[in-house]
Amino acid sequence: MPLTFRKSIRILPGIRLNLGRRSWSITAGGRHGPHHTRSSTGRRTTSMNLPGPFGWRRTTTEGRRRRRR
Image 1: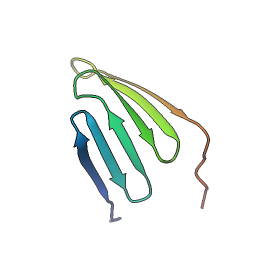
Image 2: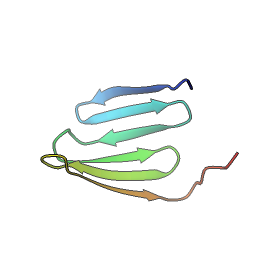
Image 3: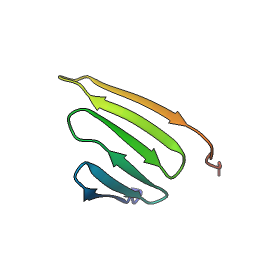
Image 4: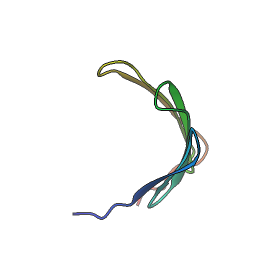
């Protein structure tokens, strides 16, 4: 079983710092309504929880690309 590391720290109300083993990201927005995430790898995600089992997500990647091993 691989070891994983993920930690989310609340900086201010509505702003979180998400730490992972290889990258970090900042998320702004609340639980209800849209929230925006910007990753250290260049990925931007905008997502929104909708009532019921529905959700909406749009992801764009720009600039830096991950190297293949």
